[in-house]
Length: 297
Image 1 (spheres, rainbow, N blue to C red):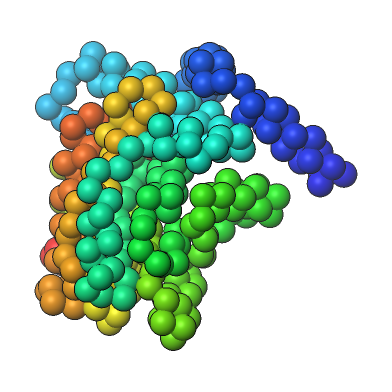
Image 2 (cartoon, one colour; image 1 turned 30 degrees about the horizontal axis):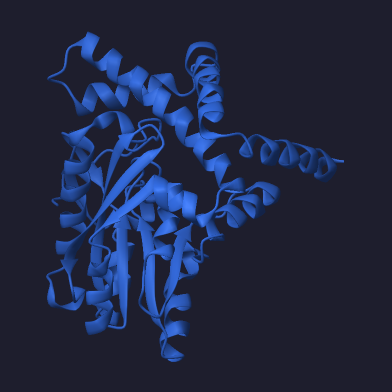
């Protein structure tokens, strides 16, 4: 019964995806009223995050930022649905990459390159980078498996349609090693601004005015492999249009000091957010853990 209901729901979403962009943004505006005004989805979390991240802003400015965030949040929902029905040519019109050849330069020197990005702009659309990478490489994107199997399968279809393959985060190193043994180069995307589990907290930094535990898995993977690393600096140009500047971080993580690339990533992520904070995922409980007093960064 549940499977049949999900099939009907999935069919409805695919019909919505066939709507032209102006129509899906009308849907987004309606969704905004439900998510923000009616349900007040994670409103307490959003307000706490904005208050702690921007103590210098007054209440009026934070309220305006809050509204802009929810508008963008609803845009990302309908834009993700649009992945059900969007061509490669149309995707290339909506997401422009600058300096994508930086990845090719890294791959020319090393066997692989890790791409660092965060929950900014529309991270689901960043999988379109596989359309631009000219080198012979396996393009991976790491993901966390969803509890609902039907939704998990649906998201895998959406995320893999442009040539990238989804790899569950816990098997990332093993998957990359498998490619290496087959003499295949790898480009792997890491969305690394999430909160690590307690047992995986190895590094703290100051991020958006707060003590913040950091995921260092990308650096831990790249170091023994001597992989390079780049950063996706995302800009929202206008509604439905994004520009991603590919910024080199290092051509060989093994030549950097421990946590150097993790810290650099967080600084670059912070700079992206501060340029226009409305497009960051403020509904995430990013700061649910407090730094022990006896721990230093």
